[in-house]
Length: 341
Image 1 (tube, rainbow, N blue to C red):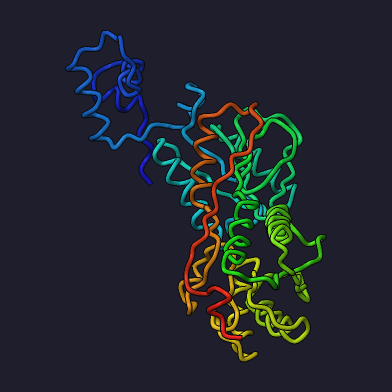
Image 2 (cartoon, rainbow, N blue to C red; image 1 turned 30 degrees about the vertical axis):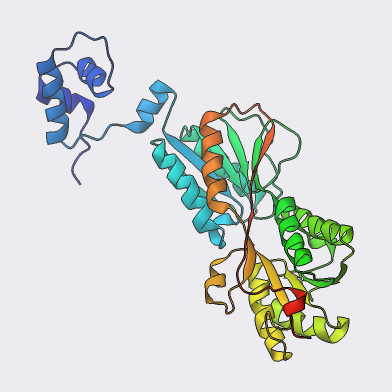
């Protein structure tokens, strides 16, 4: 392996002092360097393929052009792509590099990850969560910290969240406007399994349906996992145990995908017999027919917003930045008058 080219090597090749080379390469103005000296330094740096020691520069300038991204399980879930892509894009636009690490929900690992990133002089930290609730570091941090997709409770940290209340309201109002008056909600009705986002989502749905006089049957899952098998099992059981409805709300798109199959096995067609609306706008939606009406979670916009705040806001400002969830109207819902009963 070739030895690392140093600033001293560049200075020697350009026939200037190390200090002069440093001033020129760091863009310091109001120096007495001649244009010839500047040209020689830049030429030498290019010829030697000089890469500055960014850590040392960060120590001098108190900036490292890096951001630490610590997640519990975000990076290993389907949320990862859009959320991290948004954060990466915003970081790149601001000439920053994103360091991503995952803790699997282990608080000791979270503490180690934060300390390791602080040791590397990151300019800001983002804590991302899939559960909606996160345990904050037990000490004051020397850099801005933003909580992504969760709430840290009272304190000095900024949170970036999806507007789950508005999302639930849009889903409910869509079915109400279509004339539906008896609705199943597929998902666990056991509140001890609700994450903070789920609590907000379900609360908004129930509130809107109650206001409109819509009868709601919450169909609990056998286990608190929202996967395809749960949707398949629960959809068939909902019809058998709770009687007919004209519309169903699945609490995420994976449950909805299973419900497609479950209703089909029960002899029901979407949307001819039952309308179905869901949440997430997951990639799985693209393979469902008819295409699923769902409320999109703005993960990419949230990732971008977290970086913008981390690099631009004061850490001492307590606030929650809510990104708008948008109903994607497709072909899995129809009006009661058009529903075959």
